[in-house]
Each structure stands twice: as C-alpha cells, then as structure tokens.
Length: 270
Image (cartoon, rainbow, N blue to C red; front, side, top):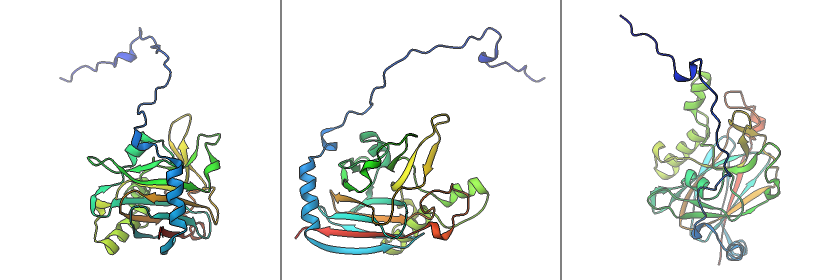
C-alpha cells in the first residue's frame, strides 16, 4: 500500500508568509595587505618595461588560442587588433603549472570585474599574486545602468560541453577547446590543465529580476588595450573567443565577421 502524500509545510492552510530582518551589507573579505599595491610602484614597473625592449609580439587568430611566457616584471599588452573582440586568459606558474590562476578567490579579494591595480591570484595552497592589472583604455566604462562592467572573473569560459547541453549538438569550437589545443600543442599540457579564466573586454553582469549572468556587446574597439605586470614567471594562454564581441548568446550561430584577432606584446626592462 502506498504511503500517503504528506504536503510540504508551506502548503498548509495556516501558512503565513515569513518576514525577514533587514541588514546592511557587509563585505565578506577585508582586503589583505598583499592585495593593495602601490600605484607608483606599479606605474614605475610599467614605465620601465615599456621603455625597455619588446621581447615578444604575436597575434592570436580569431576563433583560436595561443600561449606565451613572461618573466617576473615583464609587462603584457593585449590589444583589440582589428575589431571588437573579447578574450579568455589562463595563467600558470611557469616553473610549476599546478599553481594556476584562481578566478574565484580573485573575485572574493577584489571584485567581480577587475579594475586597474587589482591582482590575479593563484590557487590554493599557494594563494599569491600572479600578475597585477596596470592599465585599461576602457577604465572609464565603470558600472552601467544595468550593473554591467568589464573584464569579469565570473564566467568560466565558453565550452562545447555546455553548448551540447543547450543545443543537443556536438561541436568543437569554443574558448575551452581552443585553449586545450594551444596548451597541448605548444606546451605539452592537457585538458585538465585548462581552468577558469579572466574574461577581458567582456561586458557582463547579473539581471536584477532573475540574477542570471548576462552579456552585452563589448564596447572595445580597434586600438583598445589592457596591460598587466607579471608578479612571477608565467605561462599565459589567450583565446580569441569564437563568440566575437559576445553580442550573440551561446547556442546561436555567430557570423565569422563578428570575430577578430587579438594582438599580444610583451615588454621587458633593460
């Protein structure tokens, strides 16, 4: 004999809506000393690198990824090379790739969208700065009327597994698959080495009614750029996202003309 269905407590006739106390928001993580940098110190590091020598220049083709290395103190500039385009960045300790970028902890120690002089932190148990964000040509975008901002550490990276979950279609053509291919072919790493990213030039936020992650077309235009200084010897990988400027949702067809390459330059003080 089947057991009688017991109604959930909130389904009873005597249920009364619960009221909740109001509290002022409290920032959970006080900024540790190591997360606050001297602007002058990093402006000087930036100047010394830019006025030094260019040690590497490469172009990441549209819908592909590439890798490069940096020495501590090097400056990397990533430029929107031809048209509006977002990118997904991965970082590893060059001497120990088990130490890698930790987007979640970076988000907790700084914010959901990184600003100049924020730092990019490595995973546990290391938890130390990998790089420091020192220049942004789009810094005055700020936070818009929908709560959107740039350069987030919220989203993970577009991937073919989620694409299939949404569409039912198999595909190879995402930031994840591009990063996997680049680190395998250029550095001998595996899919398990690819991790959550820093979404550069990407304009994102959360809807006010459903709190869902949303994107807007990137405001980045040809010539816009960001720069960061390496705080350790780094292996870096960048995908020129196959979503282009991310004006089209994942699952819909993205025209090829929406996608563009990204230029990478590495500068080193003499």
